Length: 197
Ligand code: URA
Ligand code: SF4
Image (cartoon, rainbow, N blue to C red; front, side, top):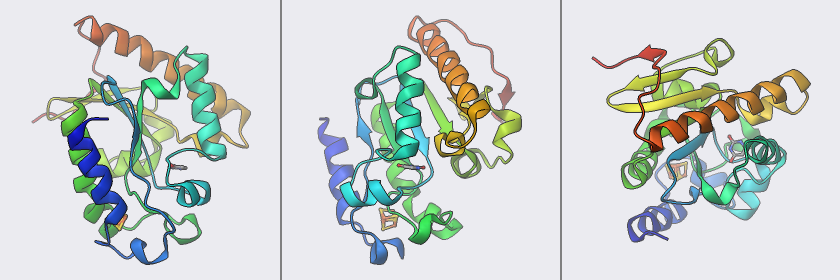
């Protein structure tokens, strides 16, 4: 692994900067390929992730893996992380304070990996990174903000009991990797929403 990313990981594991440190079993640093052109950003660790210290290894993680597989991608090829790195009690949505306290770690992960595009999974990441809401209205779209591209899609957990949404997630992830291929070949991609000022 990359040395700088190792330092971030170590700091996340030892972190006690917010209340969530008191109730977690394990912090959950980001995981994956630091050469990846894409970083996936979820909300927060759930029960399984908290037990094992790894992101997206529970039921939602299986949905994400499946969508990646359908696009011909393995989890090891990409980098996966969350807005907050510790599990909120009963999986409640992380508070504004928890998110802002934790955001420095995500900022570091992004600045080390320098992804060509960041895939936002669901409303919490959409809101935290771009101030957005109603992801189902905006999913499938490409956003540019401060010279960084983002791709919006639904949270894999939302697809667990919804057959239509799992198809949506799979379709979006296929589109994402078509975009990634274009970006890797230095092609311009169509920006749907531009927040650049
Ligand atoms: N849901 C998330 O948002 N992140 C995880 O790591 C697992 C479930
Ligand atoms: Fe630290 Fe983030 Fe965990 Fe809070 S959620 S204790 S800021 S790593």
